[in-house]
Image 1: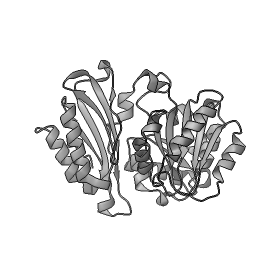
Image 2 (image 1 turned 90 degrees about the horizontal axis):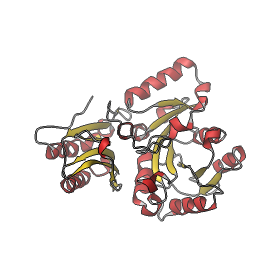
Image 3 (image 1 turned 45 degrees about the vertical axis):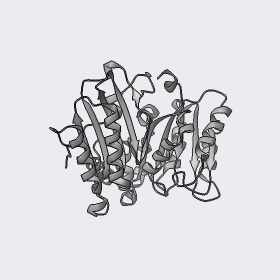
Image 4 (image 1 turned 30 degrees about the vertical axis):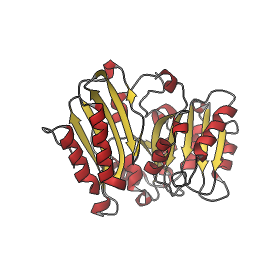
Length: 331
């Protein structure tokens, strides 16, 4: 765990075209708390504009540009290579790295790509998945972004009347009450915006409950189409056998297919007093992290975020984990 704490915290900022991702990052880079930060910009086209804007607002920042294609679907390890060069070139050790996705990328797909890149995961620790919502066009925000985010930032609130901005916040909170909603115009505190990972970036301690966010439930409907609705389930059981649990999760993943978006869990281990933290994005399972004995309370809690079509697979997982308990879905 000590080595993981010392790695730069990697956060992903996602949102639609023109949502204000670059402007948000530019404002953040101007703050003193954003020193020793690297930024990777993923442009869909061949010519990069966003990196020029960021370089102008923060000339001392470490910047890298990935052109012509989304991170989530392009082959190879361009992102890990860009991060490796950035870390090596930085005059001081980087504290955090921010990845700005292209406007057409899905947040969960980018997180899955990171999870599949073992080289990248050996250099950084995953921190926050941040969804940017354009206050002037809230209906264009993808339901998947809101469901999978650790933080949501509403941008361009200065361009709408206060009552409209408040209505957008209420709508987002109804869709996903488990995450903080921040105002991009108010220049969010970097520690509040980014500190969403398993390890607290300020203290270096494990923040299991804050990371798991097992309160409330995601309940997002995309254009009213029930098959595309996104839900979350909270599965609570007692201690589990890790080998059997991993097999059950793999079985659930195969059954759910692409409908599975994200899974997090703090699992009480039958054979070890120290609980395990596990995470899965789409079909990519991150290496489990062994926590301290104090981080556990004897319960296993697993949060699954998926489209409605995955319901049978998720509920079957819950039944396998505990014959006496079922997945709790909060409407």
